[in-house]
Length: 369
Image 1: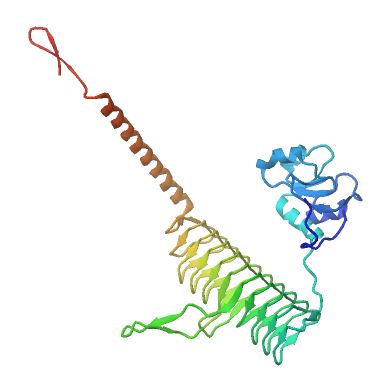
Image 2: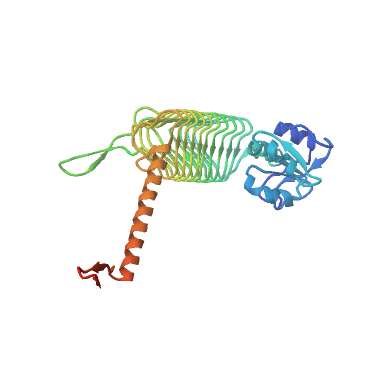
């Protein structure tokens, strides 16, 4: 099924030569053949490009009517007759680039809606689109080509680089953002960090002023209803290309390296440091003041309470190296199996009644007992 044009901008058609260049694949067949869109294997037609990145869907490939499929070399010989294989080492990446040809990012429609509020001294870059009821605070600076959807809020003094996009009802304050930063609907960047001291005499919590900022590197994307707190004294920093999924929480003074991926419902406590390209899977949690090395991966629902070395895979709560965790799981399974077998054997013996034995008397006769 093709993308609904009411919701998704569509470009094309594109020639096979253009598509192959985007994938980084050689051309098989007529390079001038035109394609009109992208679609899954199950619904693609002769004018669509699809992809295969998992052998589990080999049957869907065999039955597909797609005109071309982006896939790995190992699967190239399995495309049905009439389908063109576009071979690449990274099929999903290749398909992402093809999909972007047919569905490019929205282009701003320059202008400021009459209901938008622009603060004193705010600077709006060339070609920006400011939607209905959007707010740009006093002294804020928007780079060229930014899009503020309805009800988006840019706080006073905030700096946005070029081509940033704030979806509806997102907000950013106390922050400096690079180019191509995206805040999805309801995202909150720059809110007050969770900092307070408790008075032992009264039991009251006294707020510690959070006087830092948030620094977002180029290409950062913040998911819907995700939150990034500003620093308490220093800054909260997200390196270039970081991706936060929906409902992620990043506490004050956290520092993320380049290209980190934080998946839905994960939480990172204050003053945590993540290296480059760290992945925190869904519902993962990291305790405060912990350091995680480059390219480490934190498994789903894992709780990290101590520093993690670069390149480590961690599982469980408290999190442990994945190999150790799996060995423990295997040992527990063996113990559980042995316990179940022992209980089953005991139950069988009980059901069979008491065991009877034969005893031989001195006169040679036998007696059971």
